[in-house]
Image 1 (spheres, rainbow, N blue to C red):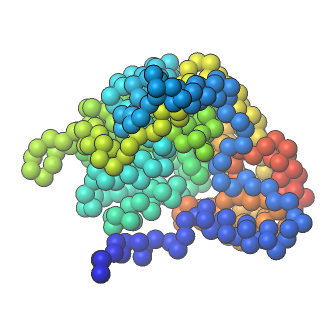
Image 2: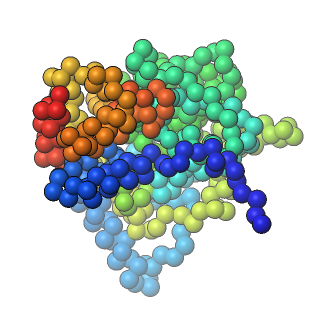
Image 3: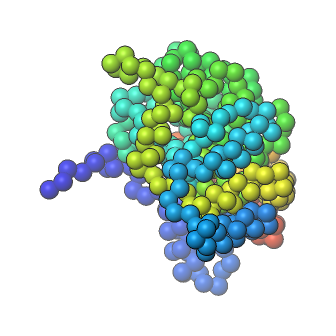
Length: 398
């Protein structure tokens, strides 16, 4: 009989979005005449830009000819895509090297899989509320977690406590779920804290393209010293509409090195490369062709047109909440609007209320941690028509 990983017993019974889907499916089955508007999960609705589509077709056509056929590709990603990502960072005044870029099927996979590189005996520091993947993947590995409070008082941007030691720190900016974004000075403080503690920052920049304030960093590597203490994860899911197409990347600087218990110095870049070449067969050539097009100037311009559409949706949501005197966060540099549940309601009770009485689906803040108990998240990824209709329903409800 195999011995099981009993750390799974410490997980919540179901993943947050699975529970949401279950409740929505139960409601719609019982009320087939009701039209439900979904502003919960962060799934995009606009089609992929024409520049990317053309390259995806070109990738498909290449497989139809013996001269251009592609079989197994490099696990780290094709050079043309890694170079395209380097060029994109360069246009944003951040210098990285192609062999520091590892292409994957998305940031969710990599933020979970990166834990393969680390011993169980590490102090993990995670903000609360937080994207559940950071928490669950560490629980699966039996690690204990120290939480740092993100709340109204600190505008959901917690800063390091220099009296608390951590080995691995998770940061997401712009944040999921709160939409809050760190400025350069705040990120410099986190980098300094990591360097002081000989710690590692795991920096999720999946929503960097939604930053409208030009003074806010779009990469941790805009901060001096960060290449010695940070790994960055990013995704094309929201940037280019690749939620179903699947492509992301992780940047592991070659300067990122730590001492093993033997005293030997280990490179995290080399370790991640070893992990990927063992456990990952790479992203399809077709998808990488499309991804490279997204990073071109024309492709990115088309991506930003879609992002502007979602940002307008966010403004519609925020304006509705303002009219109802509901305090909200995010929405400006983020596709997520995070707000206080009316009448001090618990977030799951508010979820049920909104679903039952307005047929609008959002995400209960409690699913992101204790500090989200009285908060709720709406996304701007719906259609304009559905966003407007959902806000009209909410206005009538309150």
